[in-house]
Length: 132
Image (spheres, rainbow, N blue to C red):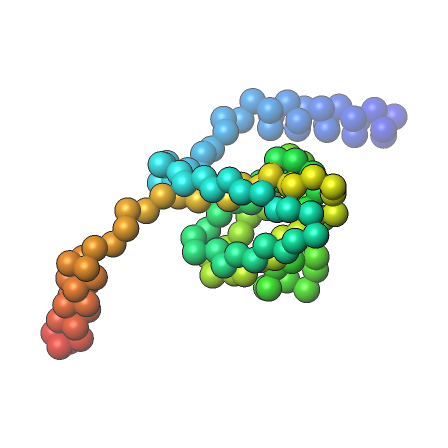
C-alpha cells in the first residue's frame, strides 16, 4: 500500500514539474552572438589553451583527455559531451584515438575594445577616485 501511494505522489510531482514553464537563463540572450572555435587535437599531441572568456568545450569526435589547472581531476570526454570552462583557467587536451579529435569552444562574442574606450574607462575611474 505504501509503495502505491509513494508511486502516485511521485507521478503527480513529476506531472507538476513537466508542466512548469521552462525559465530561461537571462544570460542566454546576452550570449548572442556567439564565437565558436573549431579545432583538432592530433593523436600523440597535447594542446594547451588559456580560456579568455567563459566558454563551453564540446567534443565532436573521438575521445579526449582534459586537464584543468583549477581541478585536481582529469576528465575523459567522449563525442557529444560538453564541459563549462571559466575565464582565466588553463586546460590541456589530448586524445588516445588513432584519428584527430574534433573539438569546439563556444563563448559569447565581445567587440574588441578600442584604445579610445580604454582611455575613457581609465579617465572615468580616475575621476571617480578624485571625486570621492
